[in-house]
Amino acid sequence: MAYDARGHGASDPAPSPEAYTYADLADDLVRVLDDAGLDRAVLAGASMGAHTALRVALHAPERVAGLVVVTPAYHPELAPPDLDRWDRLSAGLRTGGVEGFVAAYGDPGVPDAWRETVFRVIRQRLAVHDHPEAVADALRAVPRSAPFDVEDLADVSAPTVVVADRDEADPGHPLVVGEEYARRIPGARLVVEDEGQSPIAWQGGQLSKVIAELAAGAFA
Image (cartoon, rainbow, N blue to C red; front, top):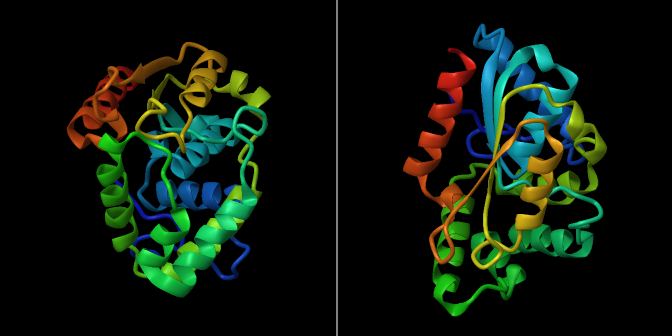
């Protein structure tokens, strides 16, 4: 089962531009579980979704049978957020749509071999949103919200796989952050693509296998 976060995809915008905190996002996830009649579930999420799933695992561990944490990026020390950049991306999307966002994004900081792929992925992801103005609000609000204290990752009790990307293709989700999460979460397994290969997070089939393997063990 998949759902769109508030303001993303087909979901309605938040009640206010500021209501995209991780507390809000985690509450939404718990409501999705409640509405589906699920007492426990394996949670999988990428980037913002990964942080949201981890927050639920920390605040409502009885609801989480397992975690697949894909391309985490939150770490105030290893990867402090560039709020000015997030604000530029928000303004670019709000005033210029997808191409305005791409223009604000600028140089992706990847080798030439990856540039076309990176911009294609960005355009594909932005094209699925029914409410781009809500996404623009989220681009400002989410980076200003802390999902958890990194020290608290040691309290995660669910079986966990961390799927990280190498910086060559995805510098926005630093490999060092994924490695740190895997180190701090008890028993976590780190999965990273081979050098020169497309990130596992971009390969639906490979990522689905990782999720299925964890789910099979979580409910065995």
